Image (cartoon, rainbow, N blue to C red; front, side, top):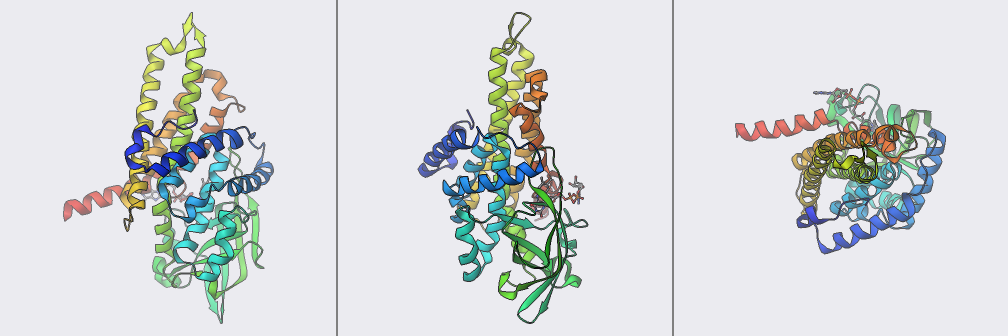
Length: 384
Ligand SMILES: Cc1cc2nc3c(=O)[nH]c(=O)nc-3n(C[C@H](O)[C@H](O)[C@H](O)COP(=O)(O)OP(=O)(O)OC[C@H]3O[C@@H](n4cnc5c(N)ncnc54)[C@H](O)[C@@H]3O)c2cc1C
């Protein structure tokens, strides 16, 4: 079992989703799960490119184009359980491409959308900077208008696909005095003069992460997505839609961990019987299954709300991301405990999940930031 059956979340799905859940789950089991984990950062970069082509050729990224968020969640659930790296490749195609779909002009869409969706162009999303993480409004990279071009200068850190992306969706300030209201968004091709990959940042779970710098990097004004000064709102809109899918990836990792550990608990004998017969193990399995179901309900509720065309799904998405990623961390940790020493070996799939799931509580807005969003909304409603 890579993903649990659609039963608990069936109420949020349409017939096409049930069909696509089966298709993506069997594709992930057949084509993605058997691929070995890359040994190091260099191998992860090569593997990420191969996964991009594999997923693109199989049509996995189509739900990004159609902005079918429940289908995106189903894809990330299946991929997250089969290979966290494949899931990351999916995530970045979404993050890098959605701003173009939401605000790109015809030229930008023609140049990048088909290529990204078909797995011919790798996307990246460059928002975070050394001094601007959760506080996005304090971005220092600048984009100065010079005739029919913008000149970008600055540095970005913790960027997935840095150094291997074909294009970067970049957030830079066109009016530093205006803080968040002065940020604009640009598509910067990976081979632009003045854009440099300045180094890899190595994670314990191989994932192509790194730093980039812009030094007098000139891009056509037509590469700006949306109006000048509206970049932060475009970035937040993008994250709003994609946060539920991070929760879905967490559910996929948790489901795989639950499956691996319950299989082990039935087979492993200690004190003369399978450890699954010990109530302390059963309590863990029960909590894992319950939290996973609760997480999936929150995730598909948020995706369903987005698919219904809700203008903003900030609250639903924040609850889904915060709960699902925190629950997945606990579930994967319990799975390692049930597996005992075997679960702590680097070669075990659950150890890979343990190393991979941690970042989900941080990227696309930390749990603390999601909690601020949720509490803010609650208090606003109480005031009203
Ligand atoms: C694997 C991985 C991949 C990533 N990929 C990308 C990418 O492709 N593109 C990109 O732009 N970024 C990416 N990031 C960066 C990620 O989005 C940031 O790490 C994240 O937004 C947090 O920023 P920070 O690391 O600067 O932490 P900080 O913002 O410095 O936060 C540090 C701690 O302080 C807490 N904190 C901050 N503000 C508050 C507050 N007001 N109240 C309470 N607590 C607060 C945070 O929750 C956190 O616990 C990635 C990160 C990781 C780990």
